[in-house]
Image (tube, rainbow, N blue to C red; front, side, top):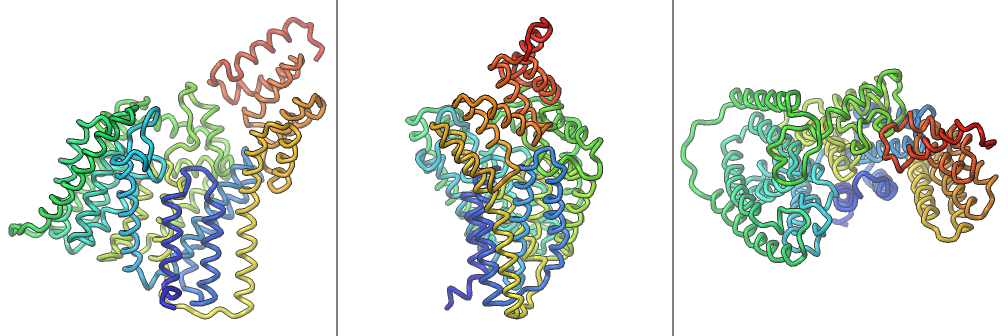
Length: 592
């Protein structure tokens, strides 16, 4: 019975933990089971505890989900827009789960401390014990486990530090120490700057500045020494190291970590000299100056070119293509001002406007510009309204609620330079916390009819999550099937549950070609082009098929628009075929 009474806390936190450890990066594979789990927990909470207050605060976010779903009708990549609508739906479900925690925000803060502590222990363990996470050749040494990418791991550190400064003492000092080490080893400039701004905001707003500053100093001094020594250990901080070097240096690093933790605890327990109380005004000015400095670096940084993944990147002011991607998003916005090109479609704008084949991304690494390009002014307005409602009253909070209230601002700040929205590992905990702070403690019982309606809505939502998951699963299996007939069966099965997917049509075309059913293959490729006429990949594959079967005229009709939509593709991936088809057509000899 006690365990059941803890369901409002354990259920949502457990799902957040699964998202962080098994979210799967920017892919969509985890959305179905995370969303399904959230729906199941919500139904259990409705049946046993009743409905919480505060659902009105989630209406703008629900409107954003509906707008993403509606964008499928005009999207240049309808299948990806469905995936993106599902992603937003999962975040809405996590925010709704948070409503049940409105009366237990302290327990939520403690639970997040445990979760983020487990994350940093696992992450650093991958450097100490190579079997935990493989950073060997050709992998990069930048700390990334278990989230999958260093920048998103770093933003979790920005969430953790205010919670650590709230906890203070032994637990808070160790949590801050571990995350400062992890932040520095991610080499994530955006993550480190976000953490600095958030910590400064905590010190400016909290009533316990001196105690928090002492905890921060103890953790930072010890972490700084450990990381400085770690840069002399190639098995920890250098790319492409052998297993032997990683084991040797990893064990040394493990001893350093333990020694640093002991030193941090000892420093935190030292008698503190009597210092003047830290005043809120000067700290607020410091936060503004820090923000101005960051803005200056962003606007006046040394170019937008690519930079390496070593520790030297920490001193670089290059945006690493971000200026270029932001300009591409702005260019994509023009001509689609109201509704955008469809949720999740920026990749096509990147292909169209990029200046070299090295410039490749799925999103522009700036959330407002991303929404402006993909969902138009309406989508951006819904995002701003959602954030404004969820952040209402945050600056007036104190203690653990202030630490929680800084999670969403940290997320938004980092999203100005990265793709956090695409990582459920980062976004799910954020919306869970935002929902908890927006909720109202009062619960009201749900009538049998209301419960039945909620179950029906949950079943419908699960179907929306399940169908594209099944479709992509069968499509991926079809693409690698060795037997052409089996590939055809799987591809048709995929299309039956998700008719928006274009990859099964390309697989059907390829499999039909292998079976010498050329008319069927030509029809499938043509259908793929009709489904996504602005997708250069469908045009390229259709053109290559026609050229390989002696029809350069047909190939030219596909490859010419392909070169317009992706003018900087590698020559061997389509442009050479376009030039060959054009040369053959200009001879006047081909009849096909």
